[in-house]
Image (tube, rainbow, N blue to C red; front, side, top):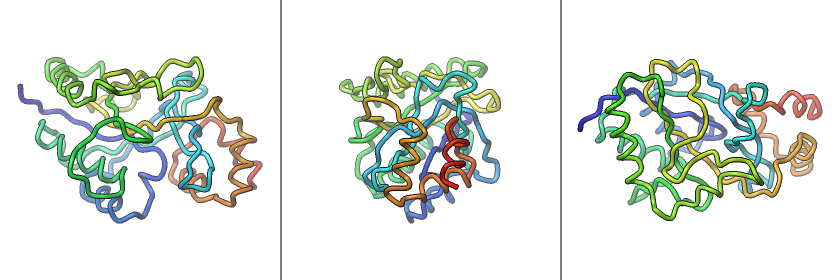
Length: 232
């Protein structure tokens, strides 16, 4: 079955603002940034990033599903909407290259050392048959050995299931779209950090870039008011 669906990507963290050539070219060529939309999603600082001086980077978290804990992220539509299977594969390939910051020979949707791609389907879309086919196609791309339980901390529910489908609600201001792609990263912490720990790592390791560039670009969490006040 052919598909003709409107989609895009939710971006959290450096994928949106990093000046790596691979990422800059991808954003310019693949994304309709002029029509980007700020969306509410369950995100927080929850992964210790060695690349960023052991400060915390962004993760999706089921603990943040409540309205008062939702953060802000960027949704960017694909420039070439609507997509069919062939064009969607190209879009996904370019996302993976941008996440890995290099050209790769094989598309691996999941089981990266640090993360995975996930998909979210608009439950109000009228293209039910096409979306069911898309979900089936997506599941076939996923490794049977996908460790989806790596995407949670403690007893919280996993934010993504074994088929690579995100387990949170569709953002309410994206009714004109049928599906979303996003990258989930593994928290790899025993407990999510409190604001004080996030702040201390930023200050002690003198690495402000990740946090400040997220804030500047509208990518925020429920803890940011507290963090910003103490950093100042």
